[in-house]
Length: 125
Image 1 (cartoon, rainbow, N blue to C red):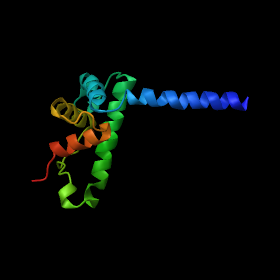
Image 2 (image 1 turned 60 degrees about the vertical axis):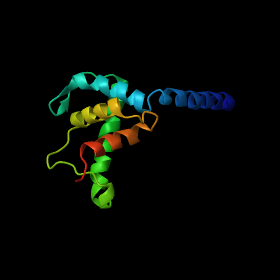
Image 3 (image 1 turned 90 degrees about the vertical axis):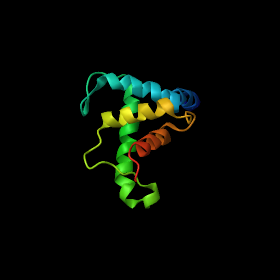
């Protein structure tokens, strides 16, 4: 019985990597986030995005909040100059989509691309 459980666990771990791989990288993030845009209404995301689109929202919100939290601890050369008003998740998703449509870095990690997009949108002058 132990051997069967270990086999099932191993197969699950091996398969999960290929499933996750389909949801990472610039091209996947672009597809996921473009699917979110029809649900963005003002400062809220309403409606029923799919799981993949929800992954975009979660990733972008996580990157945005992490950047905002750590920004004051960074040296000036690495800071992002956020506006005085709050940046909404819907706005951040649009920023990521706009960036991904033009960047050549599509093979880069999706979280890194989201960070680059937000930094690019709010540069320090």
